[in-house]
Image (cartoon, rainbow, N blue to C red; front, side, top):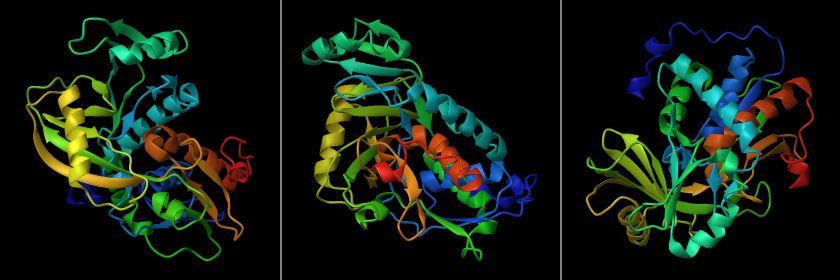
Length: 333
């Protein structure tokens, strides 16, 4: 936290000129931090609290933004809408924090011989996000090079946000509207009924000889360059042990991904685990609970992409009465 001293933010006073209902944000992971900035950008009051859960996925996420995902090679939901919003948002926050947060990188989707029939048949559908197809890729049938990818420095974003807004951390103001941004913990507690939360394990490795100008997707995982010879790789999916404890089996699986995507020459620096907040089709929801509290959850593994835009829509709803669109409305869960 020392890297985010109050001195760095001295030019930006926390002043709220409007006399309107305050929000109290419970949970300052990716969802809560994005909502805090949406309030601040509009000069609107809020307070926040966070219990620093170790299993929170935002604390260890690679911040991967992959435009075309999954075995079916489909463009991410409403990508053309949410990606520009995310880029603009992180750029705006970076100017305040004086720290780069958004790192655009091409995504190389590595395709094996068995996958090629399916992926090759989807190239036309995903053409808006395809830069080119590389045919000469040792060990693979081809690599589809995608535009619009990158990574978000999620830990720097969340740590910097908490430090910047440290003076408004505390109890809710009288009459505040509480917004639950609790991630997997809220889903596991049963706030929204059934969930599909999944534990994932990630390795941070040093590999000075590896290329660091692209993100690799393949072999059931991903490899993301973090700078200065460091990479993050993952990730596993476990549904029956939702804790933040790394496991030997998880490490072994991610090391398999590392060898397939990068090679043998790496040194493991860190091994982390977290729980993804997943409901429905890994799409987020916002809306009111029966007790009057508001919820923002379900970012899944694509929080870096969706959290900025969805938080803006949530704030427009609670502040201006803008109707929640059906695809995001908790009532339609």
